[in-house]
Length: 112
Length: 112
Image 1 (cartoon, rainbow over the protein chains, first blue to last red):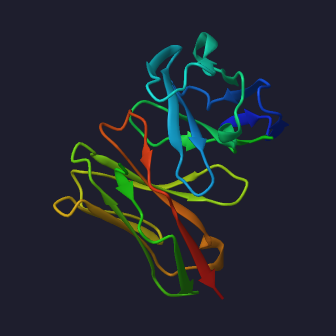
Image 2: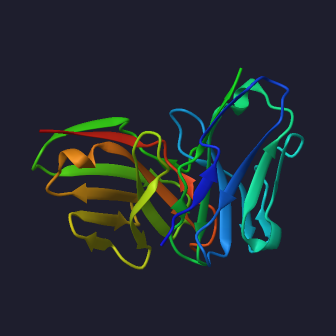
């Protein structure tokens, strides 16, 4: 079974630029999550989708971050404009309802 | 306020001995607990979970113990192997289909 796919793996941008990350969850997984992991911390939720609807985006900085999950499968997370403090690893995870979440390899973003 | 705490940033254990990683939580609504292992440049990998109706769950060399009254869980790895060297994250959720709340992680080093 293929795991969660993410791209790109690494991205370096200057502050105030925009960036987008892509996630393809495990086939059949209804729930998709985006987490932000800052160095030395555990992952922190940004947004949760159930199929193509948003379940929880309370911790998403909506003035600069946006996310969508079209057709209930792939998802994109966008940052516009980026700030220095957005430097982190962005992790996508998926799960069937009510079980463990399975993570992709992450995208390491560096904002200079 | 950190709801999931891993108070030991690092742990060193000799190969063949037992590794015990600890985790405390403060939110009494949490009823599903997981451990993830993370290697550098990879996403967290699901290891083992336990629901609040149990106090122990075992999978091969890995056992998770839950003490609800103390709001404490621990992961035992026995025997420890050099390939177990990684960062281990404790995570918790309420109902299993909600976002995970992670601790900051414990770096385990298994010395040959």
